[in-house]
Image 1: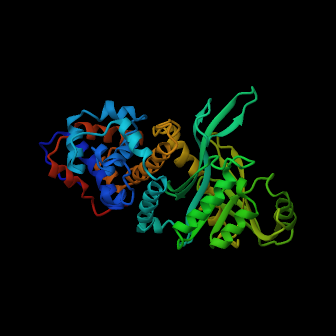
Image 2: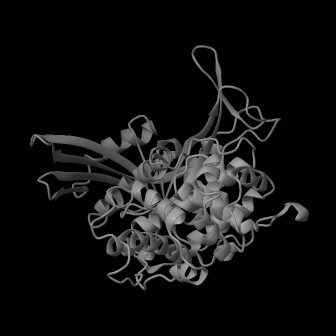
Image 3: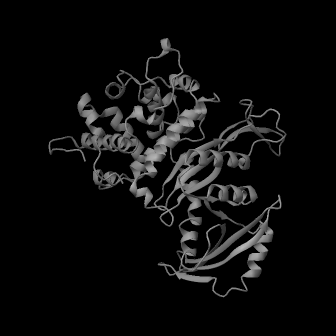
Length: 453
């Protein structure tokens, strides 16, 4: 923690602590900004370059971390501020923040794959931390939730790659969704491992691109990029089919897939029929609030997919009863298919510490980015490459933001709390705009406490 004296201004102390939290987190997990953005080639014409590429990319991350909401806000809230300019000089040797339009132009020249690799490289380091390795399921499997979400929506054709949807009134929506693979944990992390953009890139295709096609591409890329990691995929019922099962088996991955009564009818029917046979496939666990969980499971249910390939599926359901605010029990039911062999000693962990965590990609993932101030659905660029770069820089920013929010240093620096997570962004913007330090004193804030968990 930054050393302070009684005579210092409390506001300045808080700003130094917040800046230390940001810079220290980035250094502890990612290294220098040149290392974080290493491998991203600057393709701008040399005579047009006023800012190094790491300064341009850093500015995009900062835009999201400070929740500015639009690239023009870089001009209004950062650019022209002397305190911000001094910090940029210390970090990048420039005297000013790049203009928001310059960010858009420079990102158009980049290779999206190289920016994606910057995200993957950071996540390599994050998953290598002991705190994250301890959160693996059964001490082995990193939990990876996959799901799609919409990003950009237009009422007129935006580009040649737009997906289209015809509405009941006859009008057409043009939109750009993505499929995300996010590392999720019981502690509330939902960090992007890899992104697959869903778009119509093949002009000869008879059907539009979709989540399933994107899933096949994404799993291939994920295995190629992280060949030695043991993953357990957390998926919804859309992906409950033969190609998914075969990919997981081929990649030696585990899976826990949400199963509704409408999914895989033959499997659901056989599950209910076979439950009458094995008497030892039941488990009831009490909950601390007076409720309970009742588990039922069947292993090795035979399933033939549309290609007549046979699969042995293990199925578990859970009926959970909890008291509501009035003390009355309310009941929820969950069901999954998995390739974990289900037994009395592991069934609750598969359900609660894997299957039930899939929702975190919706809550801590997409909902946070859409409604938590990060403006996921704002069009930061209409250019087909630049908008992808902005999206990936948002994912980098979210990784840093969640690491900051869950850091023990944050609790030590602000023992009274900050009121809400949005105030982290507000305080960080305050520190960038108002904290005035000489270059060496500012750079010293990259030093982080020993405990970076």
